[in-house]
Length: 390
Image (cartoon, rainbow, N blue to C red; front, top):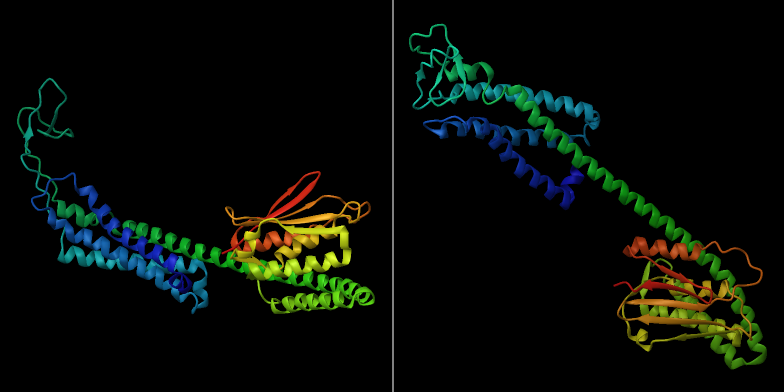
């Protein structure tokens, strides 16, 4: 229950429920008497106030039991809390009802302008009130009888004020008990969902780190091999390539524990990676940014989002001088999204793609921003669109 009180949304809902139900039960308790005529209706206000007060007291009792469940182990069982709540409500209601009957006795009802009249002798022998439909049986038909009404106070003292007090009290308390348990179940459900989301996020980060570890050795091996060949042919290109490799490793190290990075940083890292791959594959690979406004765009992306898509395109397509692989990076300002597109030319012999990279990226988008990754494929082109996050 302490978590409910700390949870602003649930706490406000609970307070609103208390503010609505407390006076509502009090008003509903007075409804059965509206059909009677009283000299002073105000005499029933103490009774309505009694039901209102006892409803609020039942709220306090049930909330207190939920608060104490974290300190007293046996109160964690719903059956124990229910039994204690019902017993307390019963004895409190009985005691307060006796006090109310002593100091605020139920009033006598005066029926204004009512008299007994003798009906037609040819009809069934009944007498009744002149303006009421309920007949009363009589034993004589030749004279008007005076029927003594039972004193209302006697009847109410016999049956209890409004309704039998134990039924009324137990009904109100059971409703409050159910509502409190529903609030507790809602809190536990939210807590479980939050824990599951945290576990999914942790698992996702672990898989992402695993993908990084798989990428780095493979990428580093190819980069060093390319650097070795460049050093034999062109030292200036080799130096430039080495600086690019240092930038890639620096970015990888600085974002090791980040979930989101600035769009400009991710784009710069992706273009550096593509430039290094183009140095390796030369004319077999081309790339382009189709909209220069992307360089001035702002926002954030999941770390390695663009790299995952371009690396996926290079990995699953055949590259040759006759049929080069072309990767385009398109920025759609109106949709605040980026699309990575490439011409499809599958490898003749390749292992079936597991799609782990795309699945991982899609799951990261769902957890970080509740967004989807849109994949479009045709015979000639493969495209993936991701949102730029704010």
